[in-house]
Image (tube, rainbow, N blue to C red; front, top):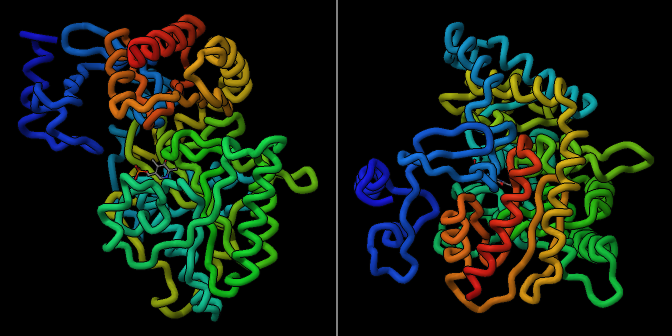
Length: 453
Ligand SMILES: *Cc1c(COP(=O)(O)O)cnc(C)c1O
């Protein structure tokens, strides 16, 4: 990457762009112990990203969990070109348009009609804040303003704006800003199955965590507005996975104590865990449970455009209907319901329907499992685990630079794999082929060896 167009873009970016989730000195000072060069990307195609010198990287983490059907997907591109010639944007207060109506209808149908109304924003953190505000305001509108507190799980991640940090429990994101967060949620035990004690199954851990929820609600249910969870996989906690039994019990407890269940499906929705929504893997009497509020973002636009959506039940929606403006949900963003983003989402849903994506993903996730299986025997690898198109394992090491070393070793070998702390994970776009799955597994094994040596 020296003396090239890459080097030029790298230098200009370092000089002018403040990159997210980054200590910029790691990029800018070659003598920094965690020094890492930026990777300038010229173009993308399928699961591959190409730099300006023609070197390519296999996008093993779907560009921060957003991409579903590859970069520059011809079908999504065609839909967007068509939309671009028709309507790029119109405000959604007082106006409406075809893509936002169709998308709302189709998402409602995907919840079996349980969540009949869709509210729009642009990023995941805003969707979290909207869901919290809706729940809080609902309880005020129905004459129960004392229900104003929120619950989240240990290790939860729901975004990094000040309001979303109230329900985020990841120290690196939260600690510095804790004094800014006004109404921090109560943090409940996580059902993460890595916490199993000897003889406990994942379902036992889920029941133990649900007992913690129950005892909290017994005491504080009257004051609680909502419980927010990442269904089945707590992503930013390091792909902490748990048994659907927790969601089933949480749904029943939320009903019993009149508390909203908010499912943050921003990372796990859109087929990532094997069902279209992760919460569908929990069932009561043979029917999938449904949350009262659900947040979507990331994959819903195919990884193309910033779009987030909060779906809510008709009961919640109805509590805002009134002569009084003050009882309305007076939340807005300039790009609420952007037609291009909605059209990308419609094109994404079309691909799900046309290609039977969930069935194809079942085969791909079995191939990923087979490709990673040999790592289970590695003496530094623990908790090799998988849920649909997310596979992860933990690495036993005291090296504080492990994750950077691994990341860099993977880039050198042509793949984008960016561990979270000591957790290595694969979360590829759904269009990965057999060869690419084999490549990801080989790079993961080789990068592990390099990072530990
Ligand atoms: C990424 C993510 C968010 C935040 O979305 P942004 O668009 O980054 O604000 C919230 N919740 C979960 C579960 C996420 O993975």
